[in-house]
Amino acid sequence: MPDLLLVLFLLNLSMFLLHEMDAIRRSEWRLFIVLKDMEDSKAYKVFTFIHLFLYVIILSLLFSEYQTIVFWFLDIFFIIHAILHLFFEKHPRNGFKNTFSRLIIYPMGILAVIHLLFLINTQH
Image (cartoon, rainbow, N blue to C red; front, side):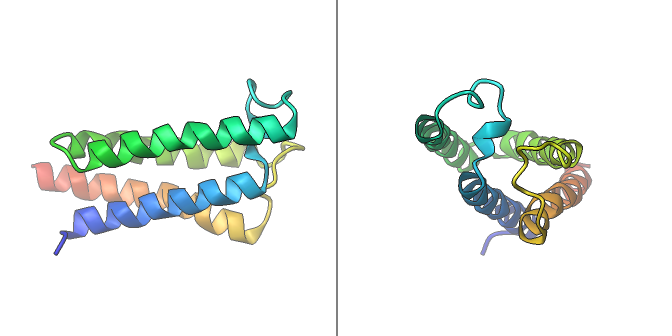
């Protein structure tokens, strides 16, 4: 049975994957400098394809000797990610201005802080 630290992290990673599914539905690429001016059908393919490599890298490193580094890196990313979404709340192209999306995005940042605190506590 996986330990609490791993289960908490996997819950948060699963929420990130849910968010990315929601991001495709809500055309999140329209918020990115490189993709925002692309035709939607092309930007959707690029945005989606990039995630294939992202997921392979995350999953392969997560189940390697680099697991703790992945924990740190992604926890910090999830915190920054939640803060960025907060800053972009008023952006006209932000499609995440709904309760469902917010209930995925902001708890990721909170869970990442909790996970980091547990991680720090277990390393001492």
